[in-house]
Image 1 (cartoon, rainbow, N blue to C red):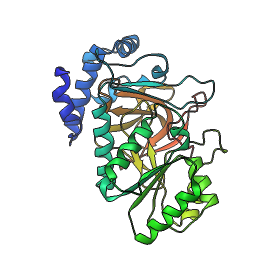
Image 2: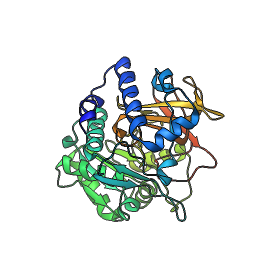
Image 3: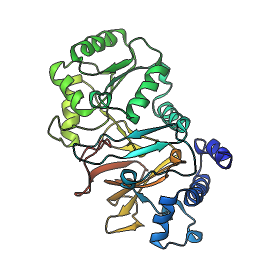
Image 4: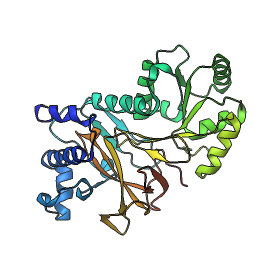
Length: 330
């Protein structure tokens, strides 16, 4: 990967607008030249690539392409691949990951940016639906965070709610810093079966009822969880199989991206047009960590970017698949 070695070193060190724009354009030209599926899509739009000077003008590939094609930039043997959870009878997405270190760097650096050193935390993952299948990028991330935390109490839980409650109770009394990362329906199960006061708990929902419960609007869900655990805020993670980076919310459904990831909003009636801050539309994501697949993704999520740069999710397209992309309809 000699042509991209220097670029990989710059991805996670971007620190200003001009540099971000330069890297985005460099990645775009690399992927246009080396990703046949993406190149066909760009050519179909008949957009002169020499006239693209800003990242917002780069064509964003529909996320559905990951269901029908191998999205790879360059001729490499992938280190691994991730698959989406999907629902029964639905075609799932497959993300071929050429360089797993890009993913590891992305989630470890993002965690450090938003929460500090993971070794300061006990990391508990309540991810039953994800553990019961192969190829989950979320399980891969959680497993590495658990390992990096290097705490005896860190680990995965399937449906051992009583045991988890007992451990949380012990950790609360020890005044430990604890993150409980969980799929939504499992967190609700735990909240109803074993509520407890744990004001300092960082409870992070990753979205997804997986057909186990009725869907809830975000405010109702968070209200239930806050009441059950005596916490002020419910944290959230916004990520998906097709991306190698995640955005995080520390409450109120307002997400922030790490510096190498960006969300911009497109017009749902004119997908090439980008909307200003405060306007609702389709969510486009730029993810530099997707260097060897496609860094410019048009998701099926609806949202808006606020004036200070955070973004929020307000729904999804009516005709989109229900998939495990950590989305709650507001």
